[in-house]
Amino acid sequence: MFEKIKNKKVLITGASSGIGACMAELFSSYGATVGIHYCRGYERAKKLRKMIKAKGGEAEIFKADLLKAKERAKLVGSFISVFKGIDILINNAGGIIGNKHFLNLDEKSWKETFSLNVEAPFFLARQAFIHMKKNKGGKIINISSIAAKYGGSTNSLHYGAAKGALESVTIGLSRAGAPYNILVNTIRGGFIDTPFHKKFKRPNIEARIKLIPLKRPGEPMDVSRMALFLASESGDFITGETFSVSGGD
Image (cartoon, rainbow, N blue to C red; front, side, top):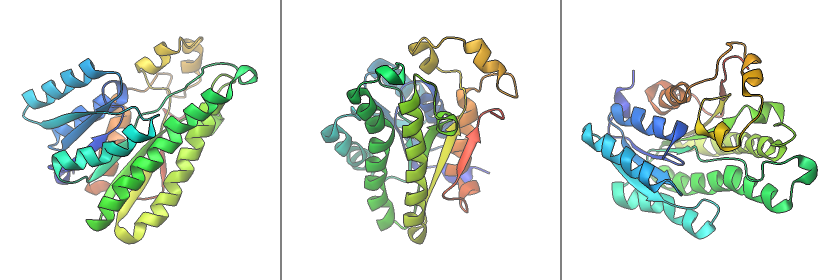
């Protein structure tokens, strides 16, 4: 089912921990060559690369602050320079900047949240698109959030808006990419058990989990398996879609 993922060149942003790290491990286990992007998690990224190589896989780490245009602009090129191509881009990096009530939200937090969750994925996808077009195909997978469906909470309204915009970018890119066999899809993750929630000291976590029809949080592997499905030959006739991995939420 996933045989053709072998030797594919896959760049995953935000891959030093959480869902990104899980995807890097999973893709590598099927023989993909993996680019592990990180910003501040150097030690975690280095440890992940070592683990993948110890299992016979091929991986390299790439540093870039996605809020800085100059660093962001070099990421895809650096990956291509090392691995001589790019077959799959997974825009996984994201987050909330300024976790505060919208009545107190400053413009800087709004702009940086959009920069990280929409602007960066778009420009990275555009760079990958240029290379994929020359090579007559490729896949781009954007990682969204259930916040796009509900609009976020009062403290994450700007995050929900940004993820909604990212889903719109997916649709536009999928239409542009279809003539060149560049397939673009979104995975809308639900409440996934990652350090993301602990980082922001989210209150009432148990109450939030009870709202999920399956009555449990998702795991990074749940999202990772969907990414593998879309990146493999199983997703060769799928583009412009948003897939919820949210336990029915």
